Amino acid sequence: MRSVVLLLGLTLSLPVLAAPAHVHGEARLEISIDGNTLAIHLETPLDGLLGFERGARSAAEKQAVKTMKRILEQADHLFQMTREAKCTALAPQIESPVFDTKPGDGHLDLDADYRWQCAKPSALRGISTRLFGEFPRLKRITVEFVGPTGQKSGRLTPAQPRFAW
Amino acid sequence: MTPLLRIALKSAWNRRLTLGLTLLAITLSVTLLLSVERIRQAARDGFAQSVSGTDLIVGARGSPLQLVLYTVFNVGEASNNVEWLSYQAIAADPAVAWSVPLALGDSHRGFPVLGTTPAYFEHYRYGDRQPLRFTSGQTFNGLFEVVLGAEVAAKLGYQLGDRLTLSHGSGPLPGLEHADKPFTVVGILAPTGTPVDRRLHVGLAAIEAIHLDWQGGSPIPGLAIPADVVSKFDLQPKTITAFLLGLHQRSAVFRLQRKIAGYRGEPLLAVLPGIALDQLWQTVGIVEKALLGISWLVFAVGLSGLAAVMLASLNERRRELAVLRSVGAGPRHILFLLMLESLLVTLLGMLLSVVAVSVAAWLGGPWLAAQFGLSTLPLAVSPGELRLLSGILAAALLVSLWPAWRAYRLSLADGLIPRL
Image (cartoon, rainbow over all chains, first blue to last red; front, top):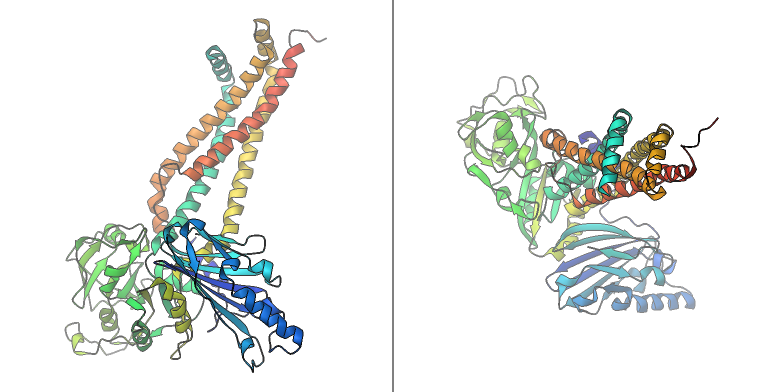
């Protein structure tokens, strides 16, 4: 078993880069609960949200960027958590080179930070997301969670958009 | 009901050889199922219990899982070291509450040696955030002092004040013994059921000191620095293998992880241990399912054996059943009698396997723990095993319906009518 574990460890050697891998169709959610604060960091290639990774050129593309931003700003629409925890969303921060005047070329990402203040954080048991419904190009989300119960990881798909801890 | 049970028992006793063999098949297959479930659970618990309260493990860039395996589980080894300067720079980050450096690579009679600081005993947590406890003695203060894990002390029979020497590398190789610099046992840790039990702990400076007159992994010929003068040398380590970090605020962990990944001094990797282990289980889950699937197949073989024996016995029991019918037993009594027999065999088999698995866990658990790093096997039946057992019973009940139904049908017309 020791050698099996070792072997697994070696075969599982995922490529580790200084920055997380940029894989189209995939996104990353980092969820943390600390005191009364629930924080979610979303990181995804722009392709999963827009279908292109450069500055918007046509009027339609510009509109698409605007719509994307509007959807991403609705924290309580995108994420539903245990109701009994009574969480109130704070204004999210959404950053991406696509909002710049000169976005540049190559693979572009988007980073979004969401924050909630919860009256009863101990009641938080899980979270489900509407990201798949809003962005059909998104196929998989890797979740990493840290909270009072420890560290946990999971994977969300359109068929299983809920993560429990 | 009671007379029926008595008749069933007596009739079964009459066919004890075939039924006994069937019982053996059922017992063995259920034992296999239960052991797979118990070992699977113990392996999971063992891994999950081994590290808690550590927010990040930092080492040379490579596979996250490999980093967790060699720092926490004594499995595998590091691909590269971490500069002492990098450790100091990252440990000084305002988000960091505590840090524990780890230096691996030496051993004592097969047990790994961990070079660290007294902070290790203060901050390392296992299970449900339990701290390490000393059964005797205390942490190391002097240079050549060693703290033993519970199993090291028990297996090798060491007590406080005993002296021992460390070997270079993971096993005893001739000429690679740090024989000139013996260590004194100053502390023995309480058993934890984690890999800590199988480690020897010394100070970082001690690791540096025993390698002073070494170069490139072997002693420098003609150069021997006696133990009493090493303290005159600079014993600050240049490199360590990895380090553990605890943070003031849990939520800072992802930000710090990114910061460490982008550290300019050298390529580093920071891993959230719980998440790396979760990812391990997501992969191992397939193997687990395959094992459990095979066990169910073996159980299916056992059950078909039971059904075959019951069906075959119907022929030899034709007269028996007919006599029962003639003295007033209804067809439903016959149905019940047959089902009762199958159920008794299964129940007895289940009981025997629970006993067998518990005895095996009691006898073999310590060996498994030593060989494979499994935490101690539980002796009691877990809720998961209870679910398994009820599944087994339900399956046996379903299978027993078949011969019982056949006997029911036959007993309506068969047996007393002589066939010519």
